[in-house]
Amino acid sequence: MGADKHISILAYSHMVVNVLVEVEEHGGVPWIYINRPSKKNAFSPEVGRALHSALETVEKHPSHVAVLTGRGAAFSSGGDIGVMHRAENLPETLRELSTWAGRCALRIYNMDKIIVAAANGPAVGAGLGIFLSCDLRVCSEKSVFAAGYSSLGLGPGSASYHLPRIAGLAAAQKMMFTGERISPEEALELGIVHAVGEYPLIAEEYARRVARMPSEAVRLCKKVLRHSMETLSFEEQVEREASAIEASGRTANAREGITAFLEKRQPRFNQ
Image (tube, rainbow, N blue to C red; front, side, top):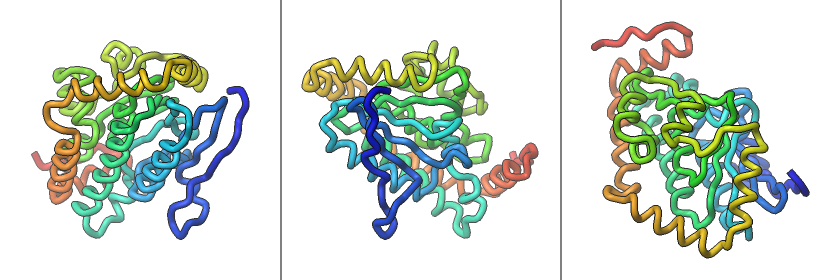
């Protein structure tokens, strides 16, 4: 990766070291790592706060490109099922998870920088939503993509804004209604990723290519492209997502889906 420098391990709680998200500099480009490899980088409110803080830190970096990835063999496996299972108030917990995923995705979407998302494994549920909010998306052959909510008895999550705009309504419907998992080859065909290659080399390549471009031109391109896609605002969609998943958390099927996942069995949903 060229000259490397560890520039920060972000603090959040009590201003102490927070290992949930790390930021390093490689070849002049900041790399943000979701750092829960033992949990396949599952998303929790604490991860959301740390990631949002990391994005704020990276926004001040002079580079006009940054890379977002996950430690180990996953980008993010989505919302932390354990957190959901332990929740005393599941609807409230689901809203908090969805809200933090949406805030992180919005932060990426509104940043002046070009964010390259790099997956070396699953990008599912909230992880897929954050992945899709990035400007350029690459992955390895080990990656897999899924919306991942309906299989848990939950409503739409943080991918519902970008997925139909990127992959088309039909592909979004298929992924959300059936829980289908998408291979790297299918993801490339649908536009979910821009390239498939060896990790992390493919991310390094795209980051270098953007870094060579004039920063102001790239920032203007991002701004214009973003506005060209907006019919319903992203902010409105984030609120709709949070309300929908909160409502689904009130159902018995949500509890059953989460419990079945942890017990490694097929869920018995009430139709």
